[in-house]
Length: 421
Image (tube, rainbow, N blue to C red):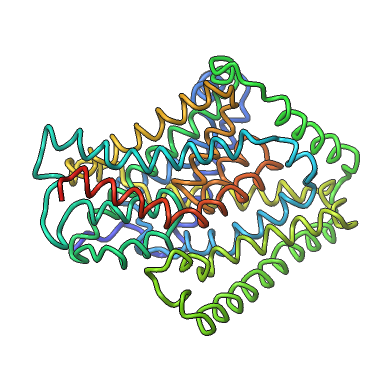
């Protein structure tokens, strides 16, 4: 039996997370001395992620016995997407050009070819790690990682159904998913604070991104006012009213698809991810935010709508950090090594592509997270650059759901060949 964390009461855990966030925001607001120098190196958003990870690694808290991530991802995430999309300039989003999609698909290709290359490289050092026969074959288990890292949880479940990996060993693959994906997200967030330097190295033109941020900021400034209590109540009503619609719509659409069409009932189907309630919840919430951006409610950006949305996002960041156990890196070194090599190849492909097309670091980071992290973390990374960019993360993550199962099947076929099966 696994050791229980020191704190299991979610009220206590939430308090710890909020104290962690408060500590980061307070120290990052200090403009002189040690903290000023510290935050020039380490972005505040990374600290919001790492402190909960340290608390988890130290055994003080544990996401597996907490409902906070579920609450943050199902309630606060869609609410934040509505509020941060409220003032969006949709035309400016489309003016970002094709580089966002190119980087997304480069990230997908990096996952597809990274798996088989990782198997080939690790097999030289440790053949047993990539071996196994029948339903215990490592390549079958790694198929679930491919599904998760291109699409999301629904695609991961589809790959488990298709390739029938031994359920008793599946926990090892989940561990690799959590450890490697979260380590990479930490590195991505670290890069946010150095994005200008990275963009200079990439010789990237980020003028379209800057223009979008400036337009949104200028609009927010033009309607800025001292918010009143009714303003905050209306902002929360818009956010959680939309969450209600998003959940209701997601339940109805998912139930309709599953009960009406056999293809959506079959977890082996490439269309099974479209029966995911989470997918529809995120899609509907984003659509509501875009619709509201064409109404008078857009002016609530002046009362701080996106700032309230950003609070929700930072709470989500903290709950994602809770899932990271730094000590787990050493639990299964062979499988972790496969995951790290796989992710390294993904990163190399991204860097080469970004360098060739001179894409800004923003597109690299969000394109990667739209694959590896999905709809829960892509908006987080995008919003770390600017709240107005969260929508870009969601839109790219939707592509991940669409291509996830197809890409994972192709990756698995290549991994099977690489393992000699």
